[in-house]
Image (tube, rainbow, N blue to C red; front, side, top):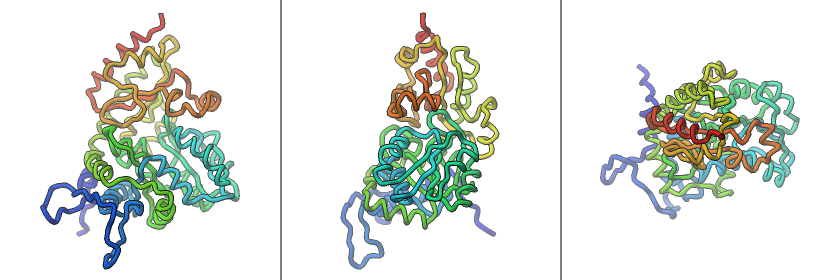
Length: 385
């Protein structure tokens, strides 16, 4: 009889843990050494080579969660994104990029890729034709993010994988907002999964990290670039991240349940012009989201009505924190036009539908009624007299 595969909570808790052979402790020991023996050893270990005991252990957990062969842990989400891209792109190459992506990734594409002689095109939409018409003979990579930041747009992963295979491209996805708890892009044929592990993987707003997962062949290629760029993560933070990921599935499920309830509630509020959440039946991409996701995400965005001052609204929140990052156990909120997407410029933000009244809410694990109460009192105070 074939043994049953472990469930997601078991994977989060146990896969990749290091056995404490000396003292039999219940958790992985922390190996802080930056110097290891090189003679008479199977592996020459060095922190910048991404192969210290703690780095290797956590990479196994991420790979298993994403249904992949291997993974690497980075010093930030942007270190993961930039290293992955530069591993498959060189001078004269071209990358097709989804129209709406995280502002930091957008800035990297626009500001850094031209320095390497790498060309890029952003799609005009999210349809198959939008992606196909941007492909050139020199195209090597297709890059997507779903759900997207901040408008929660959903991209058809099967479609992207099909196009990538047809044109022999490498497909990459930023899977930060969904996490492998809510979707596993590898199951739909996507080649490389990227995370800002600062967010749900860390989950407590107290560390900065990134992760990349894929086939052994792809990860070997990324490692070859990564060891030169030097974006590895310190072992202490790796150890903290492993600790946090033990509760990843529990936390993400709680975030997602709360977010869907808040999204439905906001949709009925006359002070809210529009709600962006893939789990709403009114969302035109609901069927696609339901097909490729579980529980959707803990992230949502909404537009305040014209009679609500967004600055006063944010200042009036008492429990929800106006804060730059996301995916901590506490609810946080930002105005993307002033934070994550500020560097895009007003014209590009307008093109993407990111206005001054748009707010992105990272729904925490607090009681839903308490989140609602805080939003309601801030709406009342934010009303323009």
